[in-house]
Length: 77
Image 1 (cartoon, rainbow, N blue to C red):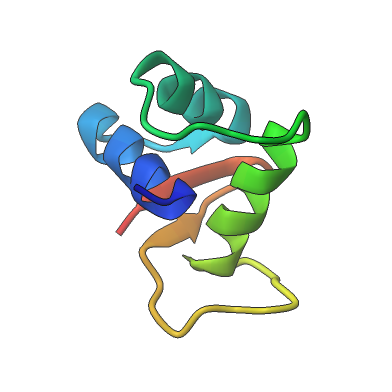
Image 2 (cartoon, rainbow, N blue to C red):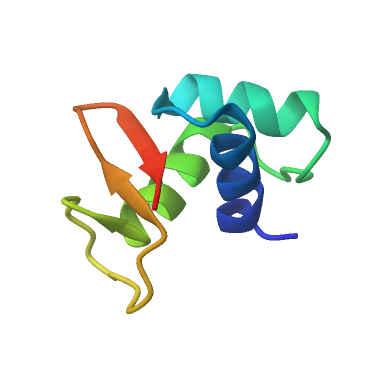
């Protein structure tokens, strides 16, 4: 499972927008992705922004599966 897939699973299970910290906590609680870095929040934020509408990314993905709904909040499409 990728970070994108793990974040999407967390957001769909909750059914409402979450902060990056809440998404990361859900990923870790569900053991959905094994991070190999101490910068977990940055990894999650980059994946969210890359695949989100209304977000700026230096390497945007064609497929958008998230929407940024606040400074630090995202929801599943």
